[in-house]
Length: 57
Length: 443
Image 1 (cartoon, chains in turn brown, orange):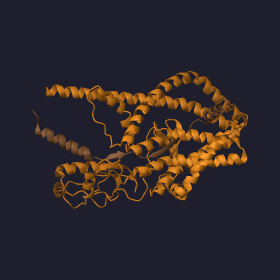
Image 2: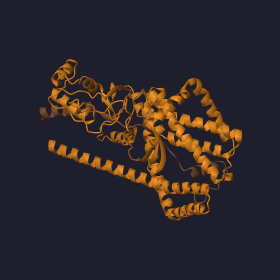
Image 3: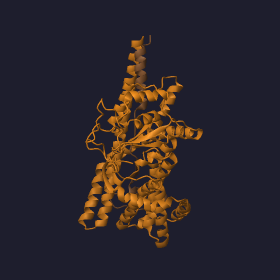
Image 4: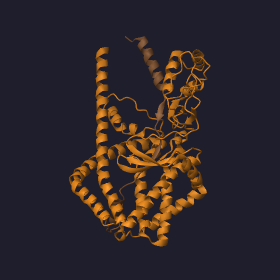
């Protein structure tokens, strides 16, 4: 059998949840600096060229 | 407007005194894509909250004089059944986020009018400021004419033409010296700063106050950022313009470099243009939380797009199989927006699974070769330093940094994804257990 006080309690909890503030995250527009050597090598390969990266790269 | 953080926590009002809204709070309409009316509440420490219309009605009535019983009666006459004790609990929740004034005048809330300090959150860390909010605002004001249609349309045409120019020329990178390599990096870093100013200028054009521009590490990758939190207060179309503003400005830098390359024939300028396009494409990838993601999140009016989109395929599968599936908090979506959301949801999930597999393959290869490659790279940088060649040393040092940073970032990302999966599975198991126990008790 349903418990009326439990039902009312649930309704209050739902109301409180509905009225609670929902935080919006800080908006940061990010841009990652990708590996420049790899980018240039890819660009060169796409161009059928060769690149001599700084040794060790 | 955003205001500075209070140094001390804000206390809930004394039970005897009727509560009062903190004077540093402000309300703004929130564009949620056509759902029930919602507002944006900005509190003194700069945080912003999405609140329903009833909470807005209730908070704006908190004048420090009206007793809660009277407020409850007023709301009942407007069709809202909410008892004084319930209002008190709601007020308590808002007091916890700093929206309710202190009961005594000698304990003021956060002062208004001061910009909120920026708080970084992992995975962005080791954060530093490149330009504080005031110079960013001044530069943004100076640059916002670039968004006027009379200027933007010819600039877009110039950008298209400059791409034809750059990609019709051969990139002879074999001729580049270490100095050229450093010049390319400097040009690209300059374009990245201009990218961030593009976001700030768009926000300024719509009347917002941009925050600072900074840099940090996203996991372990060097990252620039612009703080534009005030854009939550704008209609979605304007938010989308701010989201794309960075790419637009960086493409203006591309056009400028391309014109300079056409004049001088310098290979560094052409190489910088190619790198700019790679960076812009990465920024526009909507799977990671960069510009493309926010553009889509604003278009669909889903501030937590990832959370919803990545759950959607499984949710749909459960419904197909007739298994219990708690409702997803989807805003009202038109036919096109729905198609975009469903496609994004499945493609982003598939992309992440593919990236997971790719990361595994990359890591198994990279980690086995890493010790020898790292020793070689750092040894080469040291040799350049010993030979007194600063440009070569700097170029090799940068290459060595990325040799470590890229696999370490992939490793961290995989570990974080596995931890998130573990948390999700744990939650699902505990929810299932609770449901079974509840069903047994009812029986």
